[in-house]
Amino acid sequence: MGLEQRFVMMVVICIILGASERSMGLKHNYEEALAKSILFFEGQRSGKLPPTQRMSWRKDSAFGDGFQLDDDRFFDKVDLVGGYYDAGDNVKFNFPMAFSTTMLAWSVIEFGKFMAPELNNALDAIGWATDYFLKATNTPGFVFAQVGDPFGDHNCWERPEDMDTPRTSFFVSKENPGSEVSAEIAAALAASSIAFKKFKHNVGYSERLLQRAIMVFDFADKYRGSYNDSLGPYVCPFYCDYGGYQDELVWGAAWLLKATKLPNYWNYIKQNIHNVKNYGEFGWDSKDAGINVLISKLLVNNPASKPFNLNADKFICAVLPESPLVSVSYSRGGLLFKTSGSNLQHATSYSFLLLVYAGYLNTVNKKIDCGGGVLASSKRLKQLARSQVDYILGSNPLSMSYMVGYGQKFPQRIHHRASSLPSIDQHPSKINCKGGSIYFETQNPNPNLLVGAVVGGPNINDEYVDSRADFVHSEPTTYINAPLVGVLAYFKSHPL
Image 1 (tube, rainbow, N blue to C red):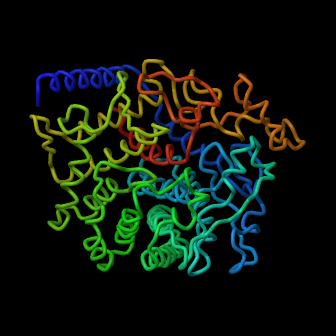
Image 2: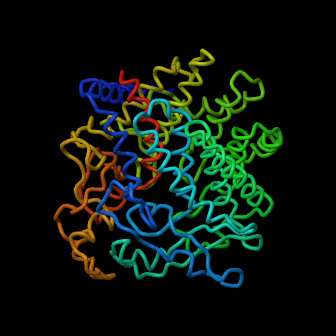
Image 3: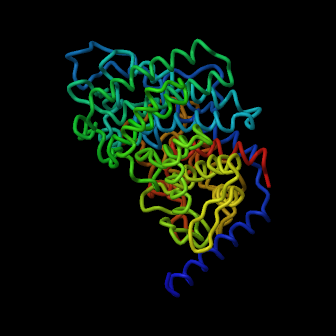
């Protein structure tokens, strides 16, 4: 490493350590943040809302989902009511919804014991998704991948309760496969089956989820292909699978291995792991780092897990700011950055993996050698994860929380249709497609607080413009919040 590189690395370390010191000086209420991070999912619900709905300004929506099909040769109509809107629009994108569900379930599996009194709310959030996925996979040989025409939806600024845009349902099949979306749904169902079995003792529902996961995974593997090819005009550019479907197949098999302990899934992983090469990536599109962390934890002290351990170690060294192998960036305020939109998705998902792998390092009594004299301990991984969470909650140069409803200063004009338009209680008459434009354009704060929503976050200069139009930074998503649930649960019980 040259002198200039060493200097830059030392500057980054000082920035991160300074951010950590600021975090230590500002006490955060992780219990409050946890409760609100879960409550957010109630604001994203589609369908008939239950009597227990706590975010009361949201109302029933999208009753007819499944009645309008992209191809009606195989179905008259199906029931696709339920599930989640992914972000600030009113489309149900099943690929990122499934990843969010997998991460909610993993959060409960790893950290559910720290969630009380929010554990039942977390399980309800998972169940809202899995009930929907059981509908979306109810017919063998078909998996529904999306509900709603994204171009029609994005052309309007409407409440979900008022939608009159096309609610077209798109599916993948044997002839037009979609291995990534199918395998991710299988992973979500398998992970959720573990969560329900572990904490609700709901053996019947858990077993139903597991059996459906097995069926959907078999479909994803037998009829291989990307939904980019079969549904590209509708899923792209919103949620194209840029990383290929091979990682989702191995990810799905890993969750089925954890759920069933059957050797055929371990054999499948060993035979296909060579297709998973991006050890430094993790999110709704790429599962690579998550696979390595999951298998390392699952096969602890098993020599067969060594390749996964090595790749998980590489991931850690690619994230630690003081590592000579670091491949991510950090703002001067200490926030992790990668080159894509909605950056806080990386801060939350990477922090989740840091905590899970920190637990693994504790178990095997190990430190990671990143080179250049940098040894990564379990304590260091937890410290870095906490610095990211604390930044989100307000330990940053703007002293601003990026979680709506947490702290004294938080985003007021988030890019979210339901939040920005007056609720049905406030404005009972319909607001049509273009009738909502005045609410999008106004500089007034959103009338409805989407409590717990974490937005895309600041830019790399730690700057944030509170603008609805700046959707890259002001739009919340389910896959930002889902891994954060687990991280907040851990720090609620381990505040220091």
